Amino acid sequence: MLMAHPAFLRELVQRYEALTSEGATAPRHQHQRELEDVSYTLCVSTGTRSVEQALTLARERITAAT
Image (cartoon, rainbow, N blue to C red; front, side, top):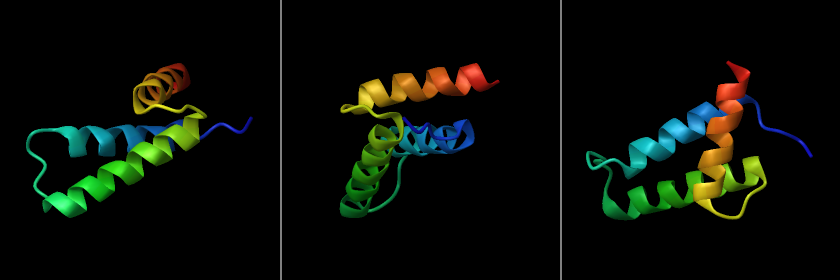
């Protein structure tokens, strides 16, 4: 299985966290679409089916790479 580069995973995790923070300021429709896109990309990049699993695995890979 191909593995995403840790730097790419870090960017995805940071984007997901920014979109799920209370301070996210994008219009609702745009915000929701971006959140769906980054969630999907996290799942595909980690080979998982849920965003929770994807975040856990991405964080593990990021930590292992540092």
